[in-house]
Image 1: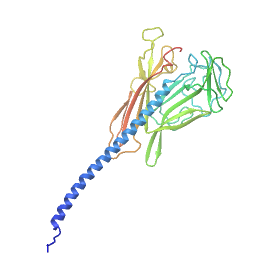
Image 2 (image 1 turned 45 degrees about the horizontal axis):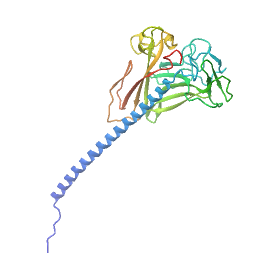
Image 3 (image 1 turned 90 degrees about the vertical axis):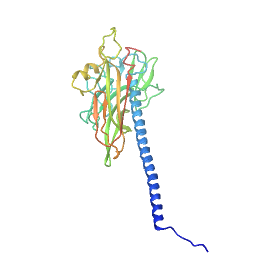
Image 4 (image 1 turned 135 degrees about the horizontal axis):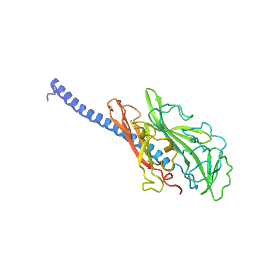
Length: 327
């Protein structure tokens, strides 16, 4: 009969120690993989949000000052009809003629921006993030329409004439097409969600009034630099950007800022391009990560000391409708 023996206490402890070491190794690999996966997912989300925001802003700017078949710059003198009243909750920017529709005083600003110093501005916004930019763009939506409804504003145009109207009764303009008239505004809003604050890119859109909706979460700042052509028509440099200026002062030189004359797009101060900066931020902080980076949004450096991951995106958009006197 064979003798049966169990493990000694020393063998048990050795086995436990070996097993614990193996378990610690596996756990370390698991934690490392989980951390890497979370970081990859966060940066993937930042890439997606930042590129989407850049795409939305770029697409809108590319079509700024587009008025269907009309071959010039929109102003009150060329309009044979315009709505008699402003839309509800109208947003009015700075300048003599910077509402939703052209009036008879001064140049109609189809592009205008500002660095936010007060959360309430334009008479329609009360939650804008200070230090970020706001931009407004006026244009016709690119796809011509076969009919209109009572819910939106429209422009009907040919090469020399245009009318802005609302409702389902389309005015008569020979050899014309109908397009949706649009006034877009973009800015950043911050919203408290529990103990966290989430920034969002907001879009204002004209229907029967000006309505605002968040379109992308995790966009912390937007900033714009405006490419100005200061040369006179017919000169060698006419039609080429000479300098990029910000909407408001962020440097020691006042010459680095847009002026009223430049916003009015005079013959010697045309805005031909816009450089866009988008700073995307993670929705939630990561306590294992400290962000002390400086991000240069054009002429405006921003430094942080927190636990959020960020990515900075930028692109330059040529304003084709501003680059020609007629098309």
